[in-house]
Amino acid sequence: MIKFDAESHIYTNARGFIIPSVTEIISYVYGSGLEYAPAQLVARAAEKGTKIHKEIESFINGGKAEDISAEAGHFKDYAGKHLKLEIYARTEQILHAKTPSGEFCGTADLICNGWLYDFKTSKTATREQRDKWQKQLSFYWYALKQAKKSVLGAKVLHLTANGCEEIPFDYLGDDFVEETMRKYAAGDKAQKFPVAELETVSAPALFKFAETI
Image (tube, rainbow, N blue to C red):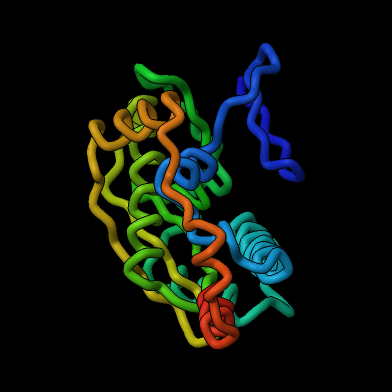
């Protein structure tokens, strides 16, 4: 039995031991891209994303879709055209899997009719962001396979104020997940930029970064 504390974003098992999250593992091994971002920008983006996720979850579970963000409105329009939410849909599904190097947990935004969906609310969908999203979805896919759940495919729904972009991703494979877990267990950490390099970051560069989250 896995428990999840939304406030601390910590997963624990029945014995009370902490199970690392997919986000933590991927960020540790490959870097998050946010290591040196201004804390207020990261917090603002996280708060916005949480609000939109809650609006979408409420809508899927039969709540009123009134006075919602533009992003949630675009999901509502997309769902009406492409998803059969009334047949089978599970939101915020906690996933858990074991690998030769340890366990991990994550939360799938939506599993609907065999498809795995994740919602992203960043302003952009750069190559680096998409690469990270594919890694995350591959971990979720691995967990569903281990639970004997059929997965037809995985998609990110990139929700912005301007619309909803559907981005499909291939599974990176069991070897990718297990090798990433091996690196995490071994403490093989993503290389960090030295402080000297950080001091050269210009104000325009920081502004450009802020536009992506």
